[in-house]
Length: 319
Length: 210
Image 1: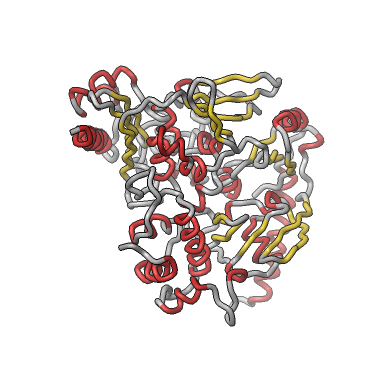
Image 2: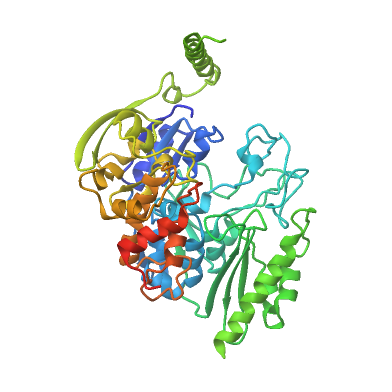
């Protein structure tokens, strides 16, 4: 690991001030992903600003009937929160399907949104990877691509975004609250938060340099049956091959978002009008334009079958 | 035959030389003075480990795991993968289980840490340690300290009502079942495959419904 200097800040204002003194710093909170990448020298920050003790660790009701989740709320605490379990079940389910008990105790809400791909070529510093070293090429395109994206990828990168939580937040129309380095705040709808790789796969979100996430807000509960199905190579503690987040209303209408198939939580709102007609037309629309390799083509039918299972469960639950 | 001493000395010399080279090569010509790292930063922290207050001065890069093993010589906590995948390094921090390999020690200033040495001693074992012995819940034993720390936390998490991936009704208090315990222990890998006996030990301590 490259050496770095370290400071702990007690307020958001101190965190922003620290970025002005050390422009090439990184924020660290749970550290479960950043530290892993620092050990491999994929991330080499010269200065760490420890934001883990900021008092952004509460889940509070918001004025519009929703909730506001502090950026430092641990994944385990978010999943266990009584309001989240009752009103945002898809979020609790997604969180509980990710990582392990130990990691969920440490990983934060903001950090989970920003976790980086688990593409093996990104992690292997002997391989070409445009996300790790821009312009170096993509070993996954001609390599082992079973885990990789089938929609939203580019000739530069077919890595997937690994977060389960983000898929649930996408379907819940979450907004990400931030403070920029000039001290101004903004609210970014999660639909506008992530970027497709295009020719710049190393740029993953629309956050500015040194912009700090302070909270994630969820709108008022929408009701319906909340489901998160995650299909993976082992029953627990593995990243998704395919995951489907769904909210299904008694009349069969609802919302769908996918994980494991794209460089970002994948949702196509126009596909949701097909939900009453079944999984096939929804899948065809959500995955329209899919580009598959011989190894990951199975993900297309896996999405359709997983969604079919959810819609079948929803019909059963309303009878 | 290669002389072992000569090999280790030359390897150490090589590492020192290459570290120096790396330091000069990675400092760009024009950077802010405050960002140049000539040598690793040392940071003082205070930790409570197994009820004892400990003062440490650490290279900022030191993981909590390395601080426990190398600085405090508490080698019960094991280093398996060092990347958060195996759970051998599991300890309790402020009462919650975490992977100590994926946490910087300096971020734990003032924290309360419990390792397997703090759960019990050979003369006064923790009920979970006794149950692991009784149920033969290990073969090589390397993952065992992490398994035991994790298991103690799992029982507490279920009692506190924390749900899991296999909890049927998110709004009900989770039951202690073998399925719940298997899911909650999935962050602790045992390559000897002692899983059934590990679950038996936890069931013995926690009491399972089915």
